[in-house]
Image (cartoon, helix red, strand yellow):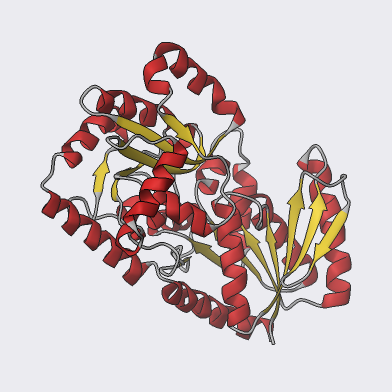
Length: 387
């Protein structure tokens, strides 16, 4: 049995796409017969303190204030762990710090390393204040590099000169993220009432941590534009990053009547709860400025939402404009509200065709079966070098 160490900045129950994908990949690797241990970091432990849980085996390491202390401390822990567990390979989930540390540790110990680029980690390390030299070394040195989209894979190939980047698309559980038709309309009405959504309101949806790179200002502008024509609310399925609360406060001061129709759920405890909220949305918006392959967009499409998204990152690999959703250039995101109104004015039959095509697209290309197949192919590349 292959024994693998997964190093990731976040892991469930942490929130965010990195945590979600790390948990899902660990589960799939275990199904493939791989023995996986996870090392992640925690802000809720004392610096250098370690806590452990089982099934899966997860070690949480307390962060120091700066990475120049956290990284050596983590390497010491990895060294101690490897002495007792003897791993066949190490997997860094996200380029920095996980990917860099995994690659360095792999070279020190003589075991193969896998590095996964997840989203904006390439762009973030390419430009100041990122560390371009460390980024380039990691991508050139890791034994296997994976990316969540062809867009990221192409950037990695340009940076590193390698031509063997494996694309592993994110996956959506079709048993959890399903369309509205399968749920009693009375229950839907009750959910809307509990959230304060009015019976006649169009629900504009967004899921995730609301912040600048996700196009927060364009979501608020879209709400303003739509409410000039229709009764509408903006449902934020998730949280607002603390650093971005000032923009929301400014919007409230300038548009108090509209701001009260911004409904924020806060962190939801499980995927089922996220799906139930997505099913309330008439149109889902993903106006990202930078992106990898957003799980939230995949989940919204699987839930039968009409989706309008930017052309950031791998989004054009998900949506075919006009067929299973709509894409708006990042240079035209100021017209997001107009795009929403145009979508809402489409004949009901046309909207149903689009949402059905979206569901079919997700279930065909972004299924757990497909992700399992991608991961198995990566392991097949890794196993010969670790034997």
